[in-house]
Image (cartoon, rainbow, N blue to C red; front, side, top):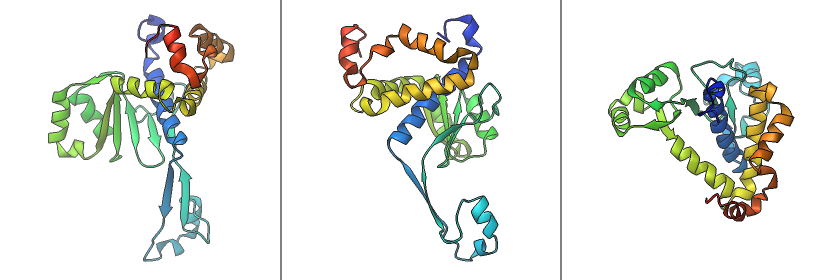
Length: 221
């Protein structure tokens, strides 16, 4: 819809960002990934800054170990986000979403704009020449953790919706997407999104048996 309808094209970057976020957040939360933080602090720096340890790092006075649930976060909604960063994870990775074919210039711009050393770029497509170029430029490659294309996203979405673990992922994935669309586009509202769900026959789907449903509707895989 956002590719083909002129009135929606202006928001395609945000929708692409929502699609990426919904999938990533669903996978890490469903996998129950934990982040363990331990302050070794051999020089007892935090004894000098106990307020910093508590207010910024989240430690309490007695415990210098934390266990956090892994999450992805969108930087902003309603088109108010910092253009240099789209999504970040609380375990260090940042995600730059580009609804474009990745070029050397775009990759260089991302690497120069974002300070993280764990950059994931999500794009429409990427040429082998660009990847080879990134590999030969240590300054970029050491900071760009991965390049993900729409083809890979489509494959991951298929696994989430009709794969072996779809009964654990599909509901949560559609819920995350619905919530983010309603945040980004408040005018959509619950009723309009419900109409969209019905137009796609999603309301009829028993996720535990999605493969059979797709086969009956002649959707293939």
